[in-house]
Length: 72
Image 1 (cartoon, helix red, strand yellow):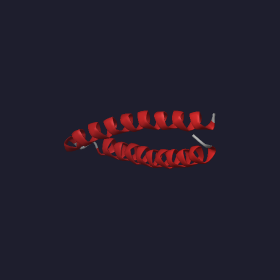
Image 2 (image 1 turned 60 degrees about the vertical axis):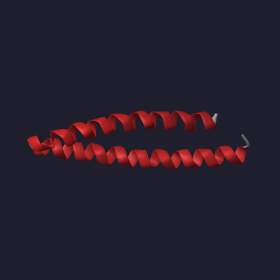
Image 3 (image 1 turned 90 degrees about the vertical axis):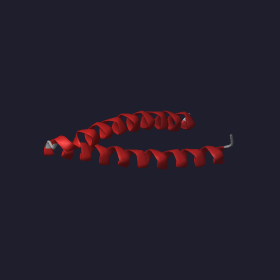
């Protein structure tokens, strides 16, 4: 791929990574708030947030690797 394409790809991947960072931070703060509330009705939501955090962290690591590979 040419340099212009690499820059465009890197920009797109960096934007996607930024959105994942925001999602991860939001999920973690929500999880903290739910755990602090200790509401038995929120256990499913807390579990779902935990799964989303885990998946987001994995996707974030993949994107970071792809960005690093483009930087060469």
